[in-house]
Picture 1 (cartoon, rainbow, N blue to C red):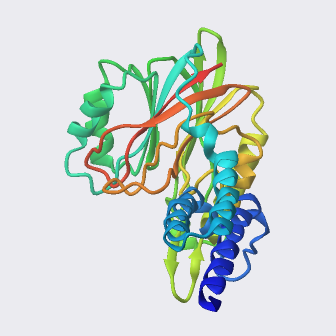
Picture 2 (tube, rainbow, N blue to C red):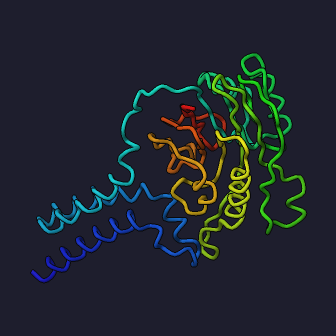
Length: 313
């Protein structure tokens, strides 16, 4: 009986803990190995605790434990339930596509053909090598007469593009020799039937996970702050951000951007890694516009999946 009571108390405690992590993840400190950001990167997967705890509670025939499992279930639905809803069917003005094509992509022309099937108005690409940029320019030219490439990021558009310029998002703490030639952000004005829209394409630095460093995201966080500052200074009211941000919208490391931009209303659209996607680190975000739905496209020759989104201006 004592063992059964201890097991029941443990199940109840675990259920309460999971619910608290879902609802109050911002309270988890980021001081030791950026544990808070690591938790937030994979936050939706805490929902797996619900069926696991339910199965154990049923095996133990514990009414208290079963009742306690309702807490994390309700918390998960409260945080992520809206993303499960099907697209509302609301009208939209343009479709955007975001894809890190990988600098090791063995078939950029094949990737370009795959992206064409989405029939997006805007296509943002990252990790473009010079040879890849030429391959994409050739494959997309007929359908996308307007394009711009800055460093390793590019934007292809069916809409006229003006005001193209580089956006400096290189982390200040990055060694000078590493920063040389480090150009991973661009800004352009897209002329839409509803007026001009500023389009930003960005590729924030990668994060690393290790036993000594924990969740190493300092460069990414510094780059996010610079990107957020650039968007904050953008004079056009409507902004679309397309990028591999190496961050989920729940990760506080992206707050300098997320506080200025709106995330999609529906769709998980996990994009990384392509073999078994566990997080959406490829983002389509807006200001003074709405991303009504996002979804992942089939795998290409990259380690990321393409992500497409419908945008109402």
